[in-house]
Length: 480
Image (cartoon, rainbow, N blue to C red; front, side, top):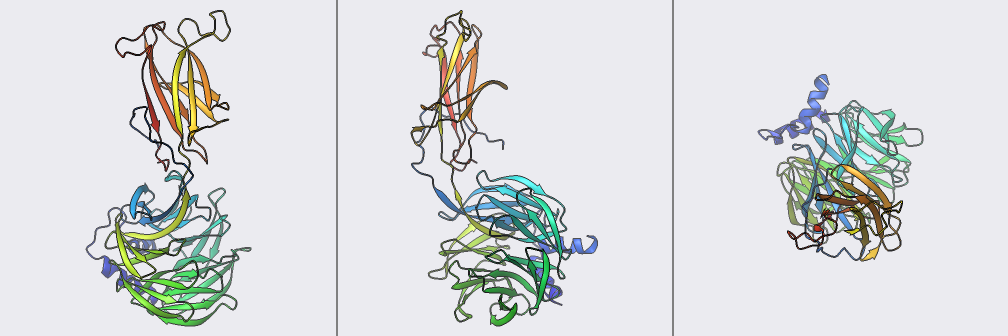
């Protein structure tokens, strides 16, 4: 059987390797079959680097590390890990939503799916109700995520509520999943049945089953939706399915143990990760022939292509790394160290929110002592000014606090200013903080100052008239 041969190959390659708390993914599968922020920053001087002059984007690769139960975030411009996000137990696959705002990650060992917010690189939801979720794919409109479960089902997530809304029975040991560009069909490989299920997304029912060789694993749909490419682990081949007829129209011999594949954005190439011979086969789709073979790291497990088609990222589980292939030359140009046993990889382009600058000062309350707005002899008016790219931000909310007490909230005017009047205590130093929480466009920022309330007499300890110093705590450009 396909599953027996695949299990043997995978177990041989993982013998003697420690995978931390998660272990190899197939160990988790066998166990199932057997019984089934607080963001912190250091205060810095008032002088700040100037904010970016325009909104920028970064293309990021999200790598699910099975052994360390986390996701590494690689900046593809520099091929460096810029964030590490803790997720569930034994993460196996990742998928980015079309708007690049979320990453969904399957956690095989604890039967959950983690939802990562890309703007903050934090887990914002954990979805339960699965049975060893394995692979997943998002519909083009971003409304649904289809998740293969090793109990021979596909579960459907509603992304608005992050809840399971449908369960679809498929074949034995569903492995890979892919959605057509028009969102009308979902293709699922059934590893131990040697076939592919075709799901109608309107009815969420299986409308066809395609016999497809020995051990179908990963699959991908061409950008025009006319072809589905299926890796067949035990056949050392890739089959080509015509979606109009749901029939296999060609078979391409590749390396030993093809496990995953990805199609370039222009549809001209298919990159196939061959797990047993540590290589990637490059298929030319016009002729369905292998035109190149690229040697990569140890035990390649998944593959993803950048949106511009210039790079291919291949996870190599036994190297704890990702091989980076330049598509122009089909050579490995970099290797990125990530977490333990990287498996799934997905790529998205994330728009960076605009950095903001918040300044805070305190002035003696200018209102007369008999005014209703007067805070008395020790009254202080806190004035915060919020800017982005050197320009004032109008209509944003600023919150003023001291210790854990909220003093007031105010909305910035056309000059970016928000004010709050407070009462001080004579002879006591009080630290005030102004905070802008940020939104979908702008990053958060905060500013703090400490003031000695002494009727405005200079504080000789500091050389400043009644205030000690000012600290501004800017957020990082990614909000993390």
